[in-house]
Amino acid sequence: MKLLLTVLLIAWTISGATAQNGPPEAWSPAKSIGMFAYPKNNQNPDQQLKDESDCYGSARQNTGVNPQSSPPTGPSAQQQQAAQQQAAQQAGNDVSKGGTVKGAAGGAAGGAAIGAIAGDAGKGAAIGATVGAVAGRRKQRMKEMQAKEQATQQTAQAQQQSQAQTQAQYQEAMNTFKRAFSACMDARGYSVQ
Image: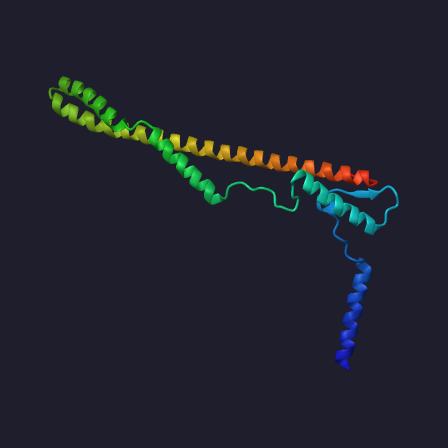
């Protein structure tokens, strides 16, 4: 008996909640694309749903746009990282590779001059070459890092521009679809906004 009373109480509670909330709203093609359709000629809800469905299908066929497909997304994080690494590698390859040799040659010449003044040009040249090579390599690394950073920034900027362009194209396609839907609904006696 307790079980029967519990079941009846649950059923009564559920039916009361449904009555308070009202029936769930039916799917509406207009609402699914963010539009509102109001009948001008006292069309009933069933007729409006049929007209919306027909116009939705017509707009889809005439524009080639499927509003239920998901909006385009940009490249994945993994694709972005791969593109940035490739750009950084390319930038590193583009930087001149002679920094160490140039630095050593310049340092040797300077060291030889100083060594000649001090009385041992050979020793001065060797010390100068070592110091120059280290300085040249340091300059080389700085150039490589700057080139890689610039390439990474350029890649990110290009990806952002590409994503913005793709999003703009998608939005334009959706606007075209909405215009086609609105024209069809207007011809059937509805105000669509």
